[in-house]
Image (tube, rainbow, N blue to C red; front, side, top):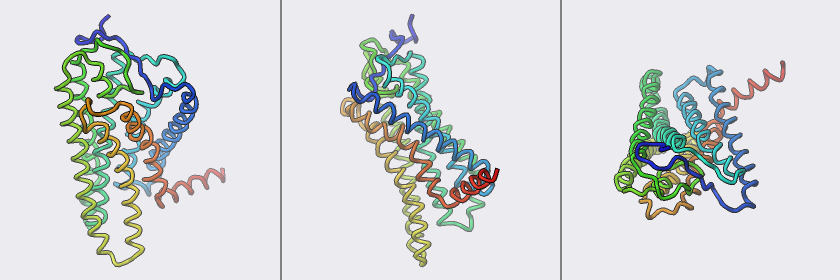
Length: 311
């Protein structure tokens, strides 16, 4: 039975992160622990922000959106990777593979632009504090968040739509731990030129555009910080920015290494390593570097824990 109109392959086998047997079990427990921390951290952050009225601000609104994106992205990729560590053949059907690819792209593209939106929010808060409540009103924040998801859906639809046109008839082993674009294109027995052009164009837009927006925002932010006479004020502002910059560097750096080069040049083994950072590690680190280090979040969390201790 043919899984799609243009494919003779009904299922794929995911090669996984490594083929070394002695590493399978240690990696299983490592990534299981990372996934548990990711789920608890991101869902906990969403719950904390919703329960506390003190955190109902634009910054935490975007943080909760980012936590939702990270939770969904990690849940799309990590469980299937964990299965690969404990089974000999990690089989995924053609429809399930295309579905995983689609939703992974939705959330990874959305994260790119959500990071840019958060940089813009930081820019307005530091450079135009008197206009902050007007510029970042609830309605505007909602529209910005919706716009981020629309961009994610558009990019994912384009990539997956062109992938459905590819003929898979040479092999069925995907040299990766999830269904990603370049590992799938390696299995094609038809021309992938259009797919690679689409990948380069959309990746350039979804990586370079947010990167430029973030850099421009931080140029103005740094200029404003340098005009602050208080040493305490400067250090506080730089501390907030450094957390955001660290996450941006890890996410965009690994994503650019994976996607901003032709598949003939890129190494899939290198791609596996770099993709671990933006599919698994970033989702775990974001609640820590964005929120748990934040004074307001710590205060709210301590209050909740104190209330529970009295019950």
